[in-house]
Length: 526
Image (cartoon, rainbow, N blue to C red):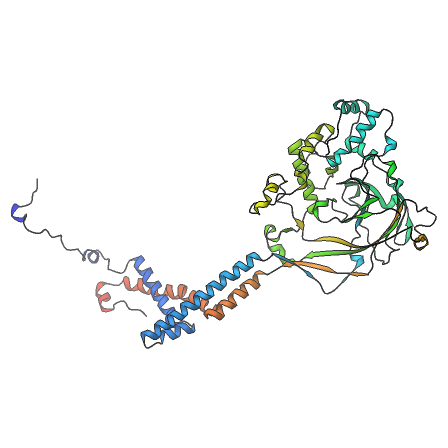
Protein backbone atom coordinates (compact mmCIF):
# COMPACT_ATOMS: atom_id res chain seq x y z
CA UNK A 1 0.00 0.00 0.00
CA UNK A 2 1.48 3.32 -1.09
CA UNK A 3 1.18 6.32 1.15
CA UNK A 4 2.38 9.90 1.10
CA UNK A 5 5.43 10.79 3.11
CA UNK A 6 4.29 12.68 6.25
CA UNK A 7 7.03 15.24 5.65
CA UNK A 8 5.25 16.26 2.45
CA UNK A 9 1.85 16.79 4.06
CA UNK A 10 2.53 20.42 4.84
CA UNK A 11 3.69 21.14 1.34
CA UNK A 12 1.38 22.19 -1.50
CA UNK A 13 0.66 19.45 -3.96
CA UNK A 14 1.36 20.32 -7.55
CA UNK A 15 0.00 18.55 -10.60
CA UNK A 16 2.51 17.46 -13.20
CA UNK A 17 2.93 19.75 -16.18
CA UNK A 18 0.88 19.07 -19.30
CA UNK A 19 2.75 16.82 -21.68
CA UNK A 20 2.69 18.84 -24.90
CA UNK A 21 5.37 16.85 -26.60
CA UNK A 22 3.32 13.65 -26.72
CA UNK A 23 1.56 14.57 -29.98
CA UNK A 24 4.81 15.53 -31.59
CA UNK A 25 6.41 12.26 -30.54
CA UNK A 26 3.60 10.31 -32.18
CA UNK A 27 3.67 12.34 -35.46
CA UNK A 28 0.81 14.65 -34.53
CA UNK A 29 1.43 18.38 -34.58
CA UNK A 30 -0.80 21.01 -32.96
CA UNK A 31 -3.26 22.67 -35.34
CA UNK A 32 -3.05 19.95 -37.99
CA UNK A 33 -6.19 17.93 -37.14
CA UNK A 34 -8.99 17.52 -39.67
CA UNK A 35 -11.46 19.63 -37.74
CA UNK A 36 -8.91 22.38 -37.20
CA UNK A 37 -7.97 22.39 -40.86
CA UNK A 38 -11.63 22.65 -41.91
CA UNK A 39 -12.27 25.60 -39.61
CA UNK A 40 -9.09 27.39 -40.64
CA UNK A 41 -9.77 26.80 -44.34
CA UNK A 42 -13.29 28.19 -44.07
CA UNK A 43 -11.99 31.19 -42.14
CA UNK A 44 -9.35 31.85 -44.80
CA UNK A 45 -11.95 31.54 -47.60
CA UNK A 46 -14.32 34.01 -45.89
CA UNK A 47 -11.44 36.38 -45.27
CA UNK A 48 -10.60 36.29 -48.98
CA UNK A 49 -14.26 36.96 -49.79
CA UNK A 50 -14.33 39.96 -47.46
CA UNK A 51 -11.18 41.43 -49.01
CA UNK A 52 -12.26 40.85 -52.64
CA UNK A 53 -16.02 41.52 -52.30
CA UNK A 54 -17.67 43.75 -54.91
CA UNK A 55 -20.17 45.21 -52.41
CA UNK A 56 -19.60 48.94 -52.06
CA UNK A 57 -20.19 49.03 -48.31
CA UNK A 58 -17.60 46.29 -47.74
CA UNK A 59 -15.06 48.21 -49.83
CA UNK A 60 -15.67 51.33 -47.74
CA UNK A 61 -15.18 49.34 -44.55
CA UNK A 62 -11.92 47.82 -45.79
CA UNK A 63 -10.56 51.16 -46.97
CA UNK A 64 -11.46 53.06 -43.79
CA UNK A 65 -8.49 54.72 -42.07
CA UNK A 66 -10.09 55.36 -38.68
CA UNK A 67 -12.12 53.22 -36.33
CA UNK A 68 -14.97 55.76 -36.20
CA UNK A 69 -15.33 55.72 -39.96
CA UNK A 70 -15.17 51.92 -40.06
CA UNK A 71 -17.86 51.49 -37.40
CA UNK A 72 -20.07 54.07 -39.13
CA UNK A 73 -19.94 52.07 -42.34
CA UNK A 74 -20.65 48.83 -40.45
CA UNK A 75 -23.70 50.41 -38.75
CA UNK A 76 -24.99 51.68 -42.09
CA UNK A 77 -24.52 48.25 -43.65
CA UNK A 78 -26.41 46.51 -40.82
CA UNK A 79 -29.21 49.07 -41.12
CA UNK A 80 -29.62 48.43 -44.86
CA UNK A 81 -29.62 44.67 -44.22
CA UNK A 82 -32.39 45.09 -41.63
CA UNK A 83 -34.48 47.24 -43.99
CA UNK A 84 -34.01 44.75 -46.83
CA UNK A 85 -35.02 41.83 -44.61
CA UNK A 86 -38.17 43.64 -43.46
CA UNK A 87 -39.11 44.34 -47.08
CA UNK A 88 -38.70 40.65 -47.96
CA UNK A 89 -40.93 39.64 -45.03
CA UNK A 90 -43.53 42.26 -46.00
CA UNK A 91 -43.57 41.11 -49.63
CA UNK A 92 -44.02 37.50 -48.53
CA UNK A 93 -46.97 38.48 -46.33
CA UNK A 94 -48.60 40.35 -49.22
CA UNK A 95 -48.11 37.38 -51.55
CA UNK A 96 -49.73 35.01 -49.04
CA UNK A 97 -52.78 37.26 -48.59
CA UNK A 98 -53.44 37.91 -52.27
CA UNK A 99 -55.75 35.57 -54.24
CA UNK A 100 -53.95 32.78 -56.09
CA UNK A 101 -55.77 33.25 -59.41
CA UNK A 102 -57.09 36.14 -61.44
CA UNK A 103 -59.59 36.14 -64.29
CA UNK A 104 -58.51 38.42 -67.12
CA UNK A 105 -60.72 39.66 -69.92
CA UNK A 106 -59.15 39.01 -73.32
CA UNK A 107 -59.01 41.77 -75.88
CA UNK A 108 -60.25 39.66 -78.79
CA UNK A 109 -63.86 38.48 -78.90
CA UNK A 110 -64.91 34.96 -79.89
CA UNK A 111 -67.72 34.08 -82.33
CA UNK A 112 -70.84 32.69 -80.69
CA UNK A 113 -70.45 29.53 -82.75
CA UNK A 114 -67.52 28.63 -80.49
CA UNK A 115 -69.79 28.52 -77.44
CA UNK A 116 -72.12 25.71 -76.50
CA UNK A 117 -75.72 26.80 -76.25
CA UNK A 118 -76.99 26.58 -72.67
CA UNK A 119 -79.31 23.87 -71.44
CA UNK A 120 -82.80 25.16 -70.63
CA UNK A 121 -85.10 23.36 -68.20
CA UNK A 122 -88.78 24.22 -67.78
CA UNK A 123 -89.95 23.23 -64.34
CA UNK A 124 -93.29 23.40 -62.56
CA UNK A 125 -93.71 24.12 -58.87
CA UNK A 126 -96.45 21.47 -58.79
CA UNK A 127 -95.44 17.86 -58.38
CA UNK A 128 -98.18 15.30 -58.96
CA UNK A 129 -100.78 15.14 -61.68
CA UNK A 130 -104.39 14.50 -60.64
CA UNK A 131 -105.35 12.46 -63.66
CA UNK A 132 -103.19 9.57 -62.41
CA UNK A 133 -104.81 9.55 -58.96
CA UNK A 134 -108.08 7.71 -58.86
CA UNK A 135 -110.09 5.13 -57.00
CA UNK A 136 -109.85 5.22 -53.24
CA UNK A 137 -109.26 8.44 -51.34
CA UNK A 138 -106.56 6.88 -49.14
CA UNK A 139 -104.55 5.89 -52.22
CA UNK A 140 -104.94 9.35 -53.66
CA UNK A 141 -103.89 11.11 -50.49
CA UNK A 142 -100.85 8.92 -49.89
CA UNK A 143 -99.72 9.24 -53.48
CA UNK A 144 -99.97 12.99 -53.12
CA UNK A 145 -97.87 12.79 -49.98
CA UNK A 146 -95.08 11.16 -51.97
CA UNK A 147 -94.31 14.63 -53.26
CA UNK A 148 -92.75 15.25 -49.84
CA UNK A 149 -89.76 13.23 -51.03
CA UNK A 150 -88.70 16.43 -52.80
CA UNK A 151 -89.20 18.86 -49.92
CA UNK A 152 -88.49 16.41 -47.07
CA UNK A 153 -91.67 17.61 -45.38
CA UNK A 154 -93.39 15.27 -42.95
CA UNK A 155 -97.10 14.85 -43.83
CA UNK A 156 -99.27 12.35 -41.95
CA UNK A 157 -98.62 8.93 -43.45
CA UNK A 158 -100.09 5.50 -43.05
CA UNK A 159 -97.45 2.90 -42.41
CA UNK A 160 -99.39 0.19 -44.24
CA UNK A 161 -99.62 2.19 -47.46
CA UNK A 162 -96.13 1.34 -48.68
CA UNK A 163 -96.77 -2.35 -48.10
CA UNK A 164 -100.00 -1.96 -50.04
CA UNK A 165 -98.14 -0.40 -52.96
CA UNK A 166 -95.56 -3.19 -52.95
CA UNK A 167 -98.33 -5.78 -53.08
CA UNK A 168 -100.20 -4.05 -55.91
CA UNK A 169 -97.15 -2.99 -57.93
CA UNK A 170 -94.73 -5.88 -58.29
CA UNK A 171 -91.94 -3.63 -59.62
CA UNK A 172 -92.17 -0.98 -56.93
CA UNK A 173 -89.87 1.91 -57.91
CA UNK A 174 -90.12 5.35 -56.34
CA UNK A 175 -88.35 7.05 -59.25
CA UNK A 176 -90.69 5.42 -61.76
CA UNK A 177 -93.76 6.41 -59.74
CA UNK A 178 -92.60 10.03 -59.48
CA UNK A 179 -91.89 10.07 -63.20
CA UNK A 180 -95.43 8.89 -63.97
CA UNK A 181 -96.90 11.45 -61.58
CA UNK A 182 -94.97 14.27 -63.27
CA UNK A 183 -96.38 16.18 -66.20
CA UNK A 184 -95.29 15.12 -69.67
CA UNK A 185 -93.44 17.59 -71.84
CA UNK A 186 -95.96 17.04 -74.62
CA UNK A 187 -98.76 18.34 -72.39
CA UNK A 188 -97.12 21.65 -71.49
CA UNK A 189 -95.06 22.45 -74.62
CA UNK A 190 -97.40 23.51 -77.40
CA UNK A 191 -94.87 24.65 -79.98
CA UNK A 192 -91.08 24.84 -80.27
CA UNK A 193 -88.63 26.43 -82.68
CA UNK A 194 -84.87 26.29 -83.17
CA UNK A 195 -82.72 28.45 -85.45
CA UNK A 196 -85.79 30.21 -86.86
CA UNK A 197 -87.70 27.05 -87.85
CA UNK A 198 -90.46 25.12 -86.15
CA UNK A 199 -89.32 21.79 -84.71
CA UNK A 200 -91.17 19.00 -82.89
CA UNK A 201 -90.86 19.61 -79.17
CA UNK A 202 -90.14 15.93 -78.62
CA UNK A 203 -86.93 16.26 -80.65
CA UNK A 204 -85.72 19.24 -78.62
CA UNK A 205 -86.90 18.57 -75.08
CA UNK A 206 -86.90 15.49 -72.90
CA UNK A 207 -87.93 14.65 -69.34
CA UNK A 208 -84.77 14.58 -67.26
CA UNK A 209 -84.17 14.22 -63.55
CA UNK A 210 -82.97 17.37 -61.79
CA UNK A 211 -82.59 18.47 -58.19
CA UNK A 212 -86.19 19.74 -58.36
CA UNK A 213 -87.65 16.56 -59.80
CA UNK A 214 -88.42 15.78 -63.42
CA UNK A 215 -88.23 18.73 -65.80
CA UNK A 216 -88.41 19.32 -69.53
CA UNK A 217 -84.77 19.95 -70.46
CA UNK A 218 -83.27 21.15 -73.73
CA UNK A 219 -79.67 20.35 -74.69
CA UNK A 220 -79.09 18.05 -71.70
CA UNK A 221 -76.01 15.82 -71.71
CA UNK A 222 -75.63 14.78 -68.09
CA UNK A 223 -77.56 11.50 -68.01
CA UNK A 224 -76.46 8.21 -69.59
CA UNK A 225 -79.14 8.46 -72.27
CA UNK A 226 -77.57 11.75 -73.47
CA UNK A 227 -73.86 10.91 -73.31
CA UNK A 228 -73.60 10.57 -77.11
CA UNK A 229 -75.68 13.67 -77.82
CA UNK A 230 -73.76 16.51 -79.44
CA UNK A 231 -74.14 19.92 -77.80
CA UNK A 232 -76.36 22.40 -79.57
CA UNK A 233 -74.47 25.33 -81.09
CA UNK A 234 -76.08 28.54 -82.34
CA UNK A 235 -74.36 30.80 -84.87
CA UNK A 236 -77.33 33.10 -85.55
CA UNK A 237 -78.43 36.21 -83.70
CA UNK A 238 -81.88 37.60 -83.11
CA UNK A 239 -84.86 36.70 -80.95
CA UNK A 240 -86.48 34.57 -83.69
CA UNK A 241 -83.35 32.53 -84.45
CA UNK A 242 -82.64 31.02 -81.06
CA UNK A 243 -84.72 28.64 -78.96
CA UNK A 244 -88.41 29.42 -78.86
CA UNK A 245 -91.21 27.62 -77.07
CA UNK A 246 -94.81 28.16 -76.08
CA UNK A 247 -95.72 26.80 -72.64
CA UNK A 248 -99.29 26.21 -71.51
CA UNK A 249 -100.33 25.02 -68.08
CA UNK A 250 -103.31 25.01 -65.80
CA UNK A 251 -102.85 25.07 -62.09
CA UNK A 252 -106.06 23.12 -61.53
CA UNK A 253 -104.49 20.04 -63.11
CA UNK A 254 -102.01 19.67 -60.26
CA UNK A 255 -102.48 18.71 -56.65
CA UNK A 256 -99.20 18.65 -54.73
CA UNK A 257 -97.79 22.18 -54.48
CA UNK A 258 -94.07 22.31 -53.79
CA UNK A 259 -94.25 26.00 -53.04
CA UNK A 260 -96.95 28.59 -53.72
CA UNK A 261 -96.09 30.62 -56.82
CA UNK A 262 -97.99 32.15 -59.66
CA UNK A 263 -97.08 30.77 -63.05
CA UNK A 264 -94.16 28.45 -63.72
CA UNK A 265 -90.42 28.50 -63.39
CA UNK A 266 -87.65 27.96 -65.88
CA UNK A 267 -84.41 26.59 -64.54
CA UNK A 268 -82.35 28.72 -66.77
CA UNK A 269 -79.54 28.36 -67.60
CA UNK A 270 -76.74 25.87 -67.02
CA UNK A 271 -74.10 23.91 -68.85
CA UNK A 272 -75.70 20.85 -70.39
CA UNK A 273 -73.03 18.41 -69.21
CA UNK A 274 -73.38 19.43 -65.54
CA UNK A 275 -76.09 18.16 -63.22
CA UNK A 276 -78.24 21.22 -62.38
CA UNK A 277 -77.54 21.57 -58.66
CA UNK A 278 -78.78 24.98 -57.57
CA UNK A 279 -76.18 25.42 -54.83
CA UNK A 280 -73.29 25.07 -57.29
CA UNK A 281 -73.62 28.64 -58.55
CA UNK A 282 -73.75 27.55 -62.19
CA UNK A 283 -77.56 27.55 -62.49
CA UNK A 284 -79.73 30.60 -63.09
CA UNK A 285 -83.45 30.46 -62.29
CA UNK A 286 -86.00 32.93 -63.57
CA UNK A 287 -89.78 33.09 -63.07
CA UNK A 288 -92.25 32.55 -65.88
CA UNK A 289 -95.37 34.66 -65.49
CA UNK A 290 -98.49 33.55 -67.30
CA UNK A 291 -99.87 35.31 -70.36
CA UNK A 292 -96.55 36.98 -71.16
CA UNK A 293 -93.75 36.93 -73.71
CA UNK A 294 -90.26 36.64 -72.28
CA UNK A 295 -86.98 37.37 -74.05
CA UNK A 296 -83.76 35.95 -72.63
CA UNK A 297 -80.71 37.64 -74.14
CA UNK A 298 -77.98 35.16 -73.23
CA UNK A 299 -74.38 36.19 -72.56
CA UNK A 300 -72.03 33.20 -72.24
CA UNK A 301 -68.95 33.62 -70.10
CA UNK A 302 -66.24 31.17 -71.13
CA UNK A 303 -63.07 30.93 -69.08
CA UNK A 304 -59.97 28.97 -70.07
CA UNK A 305 -57.08 28.10 -67.75
CA UNK A 306 -53.63 29.36 -68.66
CA UNK A 307 -50.98 26.76 -69.41
CA UNK A 308 -48.76 27.64 -66.47
CA UNK A 309 -51.32 27.08 -63.69
CA UNK A 310 -51.04 23.32 -64.11
CA UNK A 311 -47.67 23.54 -62.35
CA UNK A 312 -49.41 24.68 -59.15
CA UNK A 313 -51.19 22.35 -56.75
CA UNK A 314 -54.97 22.03 -56.78
CA UNK A 315 -55.14 23.20 -53.17
CA UNK A 316 -53.26 26.38 -54.06
CA UNK A 317 -55.29 27.03 -57.23
CA UNK A 318 -58.69 26.41 -55.69
CA UNK A 319 -60.01 24.90 -58.93
CA UNK A 320 -59.73 21.60 -60.77
CA UNK A 321 -58.28 21.03 -64.22
CA UNK A 322 -59.94 17.67 -64.87
CA UNK A 323 -62.95 15.67 -63.75
CA UNK A 324 -66.50 16.72 -63.01
CA UNK A 325 -67.54 20.18 -61.98
CA UNK A 326 -68.82 21.52 -58.69
CA UNK A 327 -72.38 20.37 -59.39
CA UNK A 328 -71.35 16.73 -59.73
CA UNK A 329 -69.18 16.91 -56.64
CA UNK A 330 -71.91 18.47 -54.48
CA UNK A 331 -74.41 15.91 -55.72
CA UNK A 332 -72.07 13.07 -54.82
CA UNK A 333 -71.43 14.67 -51.43
CA UNK A 334 -75.16 14.88 -50.76
CA UNK A 335 -75.61 11.29 -51.83
CA UNK A 336 -72.95 10.06 -49.42
CA UNK A 337 -74.31 12.23 -46.60
CA UNK A 338 -77.84 10.88 -47.07
CA UNK A 339 -76.52 7.33 -47.34
CA UNK A 340 -74.58 7.73 -44.07
CA UNK A 341 -77.44 9.35 -42.14
CA UNK A 342 -80.52 7.56 -43.46
CA UNK A 343 -79.17 4.56 -45.36
CA UNK A 344 -80.75 5.70 -48.64
CA UNK A 345 -80.60 8.45 -51.26
CA UNK A 346 -83.57 10.59 -52.42
CA UNK A 347 -84.61 9.84 -55.98
CA UNK A 348 -83.79 13.38 -57.12
CA UNK A 349 -80.10 12.82 -56.24
CA UNK A 350 -79.70 9.62 -58.24
CA UNK A 351 -77.99 10.72 -61.47
CA UNK A 352 -75.39 8.22 -62.61
CA UNK A 353 -72.27 10.16 -63.45
CA UNK A 354 -69.76 8.46 -65.76
CA UNK A 355 -66.82 7.55 -63.53
CA UNK A 356 -63.90 5.15 -64.03
CA UNK A 357 -65.04 3.05 -61.06
CA UNK A 358 -68.66 3.90 -60.25
CA UNK A 359 -69.83 3.11 -56.78
CA UNK A 360 -72.65 0.73 -56.06
CA UNK A 361 -76.04 2.40 -56.40
CA UNK A 362 -77.55 3.28 -53.04
CA UNK A 363 -81.16 2.29 -52.26
CA UNK A 364 -83.75 4.92 -53.10
CA UNK A 365 -85.52 6.54 -50.17
CA UNK A 366 -89.17 5.66 -49.71
CA UNK A 367 -91.85 6.98 -47.40
CA UNK A 368 -90.41 4.86 -44.62
CA UNK A 369 -87.22 6.97 -44.54
CA UNK A 370 -89.04 10.29 -44.85
CA UNK A 371 -88.83 10.90 -41.09
CA UNK A 372 -85.03 10.64 -41.23
CA UNK A 373 -84.82 12.96 -44.24
CA UNK A 374 -87.05 15.47 -42.48
CA UNK A 375 -84.83 15.36 -39.42
CA UNK A 376 -81.64 16.14 -41.36
CA UNK A 377 -82.99 18.30 -44.17
CA UNK A 378 -81.23 21.43 -42.89
CA UNK A 379 -77.91 19.58 -42.99
CA UNK A 380 -78.40 19.01 -46.73
CA UNK A 381 -78.77 22.77 -47.28
CA UNK A 382 -75.47 24.03 -45.84
CA UNK A 383 -71.81 23.34 -46.49
CA UNK A 384 -69.20 23.14 -43.76
CA UNK A 385 -67.13 26.37 -43.93
CA UNK A 386 -64.07 24.62 -42.48
CA UNK A 387 -61.91 25.34 -39.49
CA UNK A 388 -60.53 28.76 -38.75
CA UNK A 389 -63.72 30.63 -39.70
CA UNK A 390 -65.60 33.24 -37.71
CA UNK A 391 -67.22 32.05 -34.46
CA UNK A 392 -70.58 33.15 -35.84
CA UNK A 393 -70.40 30.14 -38.19
CA UNK A 394 -70.15 27.61 -35.37
CA UNK A 395 -73.65 26.30 -36.11
CA UNK A 396 -72.75 25.75 -39.77
CA UNK A 397 -69.64 23.80 -38.75
CA UNK A 398 -71.72 21.48 -36.59
CA UNK A 399 -74.80 20.97 -38.78
CA UNK A 400 -73.62 20.99 -42.39
CA UNK A 401 -72.21 18.71 -45.06
CA UNK A 402 -68.45 18.31 -45.24
CA UNK A 403 -67.67 18.79 -48.93
CA UNK A 404 -64.20 20.29 -48.56
CA UNK A 405 -62.89 18.37 -51.57
CA UNK A 406 -65.38 19.94 -53.99
CA UNK A 407 -63.95 22.63 -56.25
CA UNK A 408 -65.05 24.36 -59.42
CA UNK A 409 -63.46 23.61 -62.76
CA UNK A 410 -60.82 26.02 -64.00
CA UNK A 411 -62.28 25.62 -67.48
CA UNK A 412 -66.02 26.20 -67.41
CA UNK A 413 -68.79 28.02 -69.20
CA UNK A 414 -71.27 30.22 -67.36
CA UNK A 415 -74.34 31.98 -68.62
CA UNK A 416 -76.11 35.20 -67.75
CA UNK A 417 -79.24 36.58 -69.32
CA UNK A 418 -80.85 39.97 -69.69
CA UNK A 419 -84.60 39.56 -69.41
CA UNK A 420 -87.38 41.62 -70.88
CA UNK A 421 -91.05 40.68 -70.89
CA UNK A 422 -94.42 42.03 -71.96
CA UNK A 423 -97.86 40.93 -70.88
CA UNK A 424 -100.19 39.64 -73.58
CA UNK A 425 -103.15 41.63 -72.33
CA UNK A 426 -101.55 44.86 -73.46
CA UNK A 427 -101.54 44.22 -77.20
CA UNK A 428 -101.67 40.64 -78.41
CA UNK A 429 -101.05 41.60 -82.05
CA UNK A 430 -97.49 42.64 -81.21
CA UNK A 431 -96.57 39.04 -80.46
CA UNK A 432 -98.15 37.38 -83.46
CA UNK A 433 -95.38 35.59 -85.38
CA UNK A 434 -94.71 32.09 -86.67
CA UNK A 435 -94.27 30.80 -83.11
CA UNK A 436 -97.69 31.90 -81.86
CA UNK A 437 -99.66 31.61 -85.09
CA UNK A 438 -102.93 29.73 -84.62
CA UNK A 439 -102.46 29.12 -80.88
CA UNK A 440 -104.74 30.37 -78.13
CA UNK A 441 -102.73 32.61 -75.83
CA UNK A 442 -104.85 31.91 -72.75
CA UNK A 443 -102.69 30.66 -69.87
CA UNK A 444 -99.69 30.51 -72.17
CA UNK A 445 -96.16 31.86 -71.99
CA UNK A 446 -93.85 32.44 -74.92
CA UNK A 447 -90.12 32.07 -74.25
CA UNK A 448 -87.27 33.08 -76.52
CA UNK A 449 -83.66 32.31 -75.67
CA UNK A 450 -81.20 33.87 -78.10
CA UNK A 451 -77.93 35.69 -78.73
CA UNK A 452 -78.02 39.40 -79.45
CA UNK A 453 -74.45 39.82 -80.73
CA UNK A 454 -72.35 37.50 -82.88
CA UNK A 455 -69.18 37.80 -80.75
CA UNK A 456 -68.81 37.22 -77.03
CA UNK A 457 -66.04 37.91 -74.56
CA UNK A 458 -63.91 35.18 -73.10
CA UNK A 459 -61.64 35.10 -70.09
CA UNK A 460 -58.37 33.50 -69.03
CA UNK A 461 -57.73 32.07 -65.58
CA UNK A 462 -54.10 32.69 -64.71
CA UNK A 463 -51.90 33.04 -61.66
CA UNK A 464 -52.23 36.37 -59.89
CA UNK A 465 -48.44 36.54 -59.52
CA UNK A 466 -46.10 34.05 -61.15
CA UNK A 467 -43.14 32.70 -59.22
CA UNK A 468 -40.73 34.37 -61.65
CA UNK A 469 -42.36 37.73 -60.96
CA UNK A 470 -42.16 37.12 -57.21
CA UNK A 471 -38.44 36.31 -57.37
CA UNK A 472 -37.74 39.29 -59.64
CA UNK A 473 -39.61 41.71 -57.38
CA UNK A 474 -37.99 40.53 -54.15
CA UNK A 475 -34.49 40.38 -55.63
CA UNK A 476 -34.76 43.83 -57.21
CA UNK A 477 -35.84 45.49 -53.98
CA UNK A 478 -33.19 43.63 -52.02
CA UNK A 479 -30.45 44.70 -54.45
CA UNK A 480 -31.52 48.36 -54.44
CA UNK A 481 -31.62 48.59 -50.64
CA UNK A 482 -28.67 46.42 -49.60
CA UNK A 483 -26.46 46.50 -52.69
CA UNK A 484 -26.22 42.71 -52.74
CA UNK A 485 -26.73 41.25 -56.20
CA UNK A 486 -26.31 38.00 -58.07
CA UNK A 487 -22.61 38.84 -58.51
CA UNK A 488 -22.22 38.89 -54.74
CA UNK A 489 -23.92 35.52 -54.45
CA UNK A 490 -21.63 34.13 -57.14
CA UNK A 491 -18.57 35.43 -55.31
CA UNK A 492 -19.77 33.89 -52.04
CA UNK A 493 -20.40 30.52 -53.70
CA UNK A 494 -16.95 30.63 -55.32
CA UNK A 495 -15.15 31.37 -52.07
CA UNK A 496 -17.14 28.76 -50.12
CA UNK A 497 -16.35 26.05 -52.65
CA UNK A 498 -13.27 26.46 -54.82
CA UNK A 499 -11.38 28.82 -52.52
CA UNK A 500 -12.25 26.71 -49.47
CA UNK A 501 -10.96 23.55 -51.19
CA UNK A 502 -7.78 25.39 -52.15
CA UNK A 503 -7.03 26.39 -48.54
CA UNK A 504 -7.92 22.93 -47.24
CA UNK A 505 -5.55 21.21 -49.67
CA UNK A 506 -2.82 23.71 -48.85
CA UNK A 507 -3.13 23.07 -45.12
CA UNK A 508 -3.29 19.33 -45.63
CA UNK A 509 -0.12 19.40 -47.72
CA UNK A 510 1.71 21.47 -45.13
CA UNK A 511 0.50 19.25 -42.26
CA UNK A 512 2.08 16.20 -43.88
CA UNK A 513 5.55 17.79 -43.87
CA UNK A 514 8.21 16.90 -41.27
CA UNK A 515 8.54 19.02 -38.11
CA UNK A 516 11.76 20.50 -39.44
CA UNK A 517 10.14 21.65 -42.65
CA UNK A 518 7.14 22.84 -40.72
CA UNK A 519 9.32 24.99 -38.53
CA UNK A 520 11.07 26.34 -41.62
CA UNK A 521 7.78 27.09 -43.44
CA UNK A 522 5.21 28.16 -40.88
CA UNK A 523 1.51 28.19 -41.85
CA UNK A 524 0.56 31.42 -43.49
CA UNK A 525 -2.46 32.57 -45.40
CA UNK A 526 -1.85 32.80 -49.14
